[in-house]
Image (tube, rainbow, N blue to C red; front, top):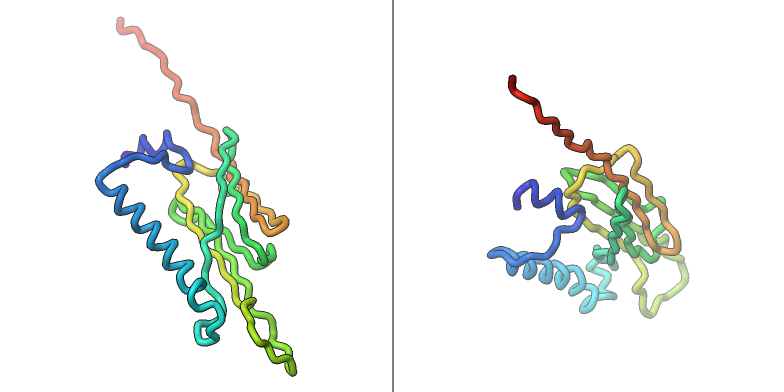
Length: 161
């Protein structure tokens, strides 16, 4: 993809078909399967650590002057979330450690334990990193990514004498 194409597409590339698009889609599906497979088949095996990394569902809105990213992270507190911009990628991480086990209580089944989320989102526009804001409310993380103002190209025809 050429740089000019990225600039026109914004934060989320438009879907297009190309020789590698099928492979990209297969890789995404395998990632989804890998992330959810262990949880589906082995939710209560203590040897697996009792928790799996999840990919949070997200919505991305373009309001013109900023992007708003909303990610579902149920059970996560704001203090457990880390957000970084690394190499034009928005990285969202969250980890909730298992609470201290109570003595004298014999669990028959225990599914609530360690919980973590991770998501990387490509950013194809210049973002004002000093003005990024985030808030957590009711299990939904909202990140506001203000766009940098683009300098409009000015043209002036110069007459040759």
